[in-house]
Length: 309
Image (cartoon, rainbow, N blue to C red; front, side, top):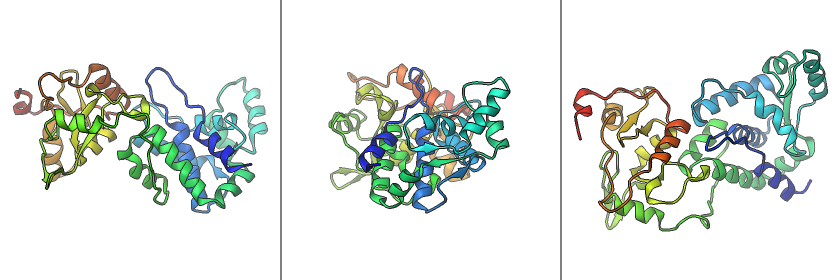
């Protein structure tokens, strides 16, 4: 198989979509498998191992859900091309049919039959002999599915050595960052940080409320000026917004005095608003972030916070 063919197949797997909901199951599984190639691990990995690894990734980097199903992408990747295989496929399908079941393969059967899955032999050998190809595919998967602020965390979580991600911004508005930083008057909308190094803003970034990778636009009403810390926390779901533009802090955020000072004390605080005459964050993007990123439930605001305006 040619490197261009495998790159196209891996970068364009079918991702389940329902409206604006995120479903990063296949991208995360592919990143796990690519990392295993780089670490020179066996081509086929036991489902029981993948189940635990992928479940953790879905909890950390997927949208908050009541339950998680690593078995779905593990089985469905077989239908996205000729790069993924489960040698026990026929045996599993016969067992499923004998139990009057159809559709996705139940997790219980994958475990009972000690299923293993991974790249086909030709694809594995091609990837193993071409680290640059693995780098390029990994970078594209990250760009297409996650904001840049999460890339390093995801690479660490899957056990992937550092990958250089050079994003193409040809479809984005190059003025987005300048516009957002300007209308928020060069200050973080959460904490007010406004440091400068000479004439340049220091550790201040323009964040998309609805991720660009999820179809969010480069527009005033989808942007926030955030310091590096609060940008990362916002994209991880530690911080969010309510419909009244007040800051939400996840109950899952814990720590000592530094965390209290830098994060949890902002629960219930009003978000700093952009200059008059510009558009503040639109409700539709707040709702998307609340449902697809924020790690609820939210902390209750302290009495003195809730009374601020």
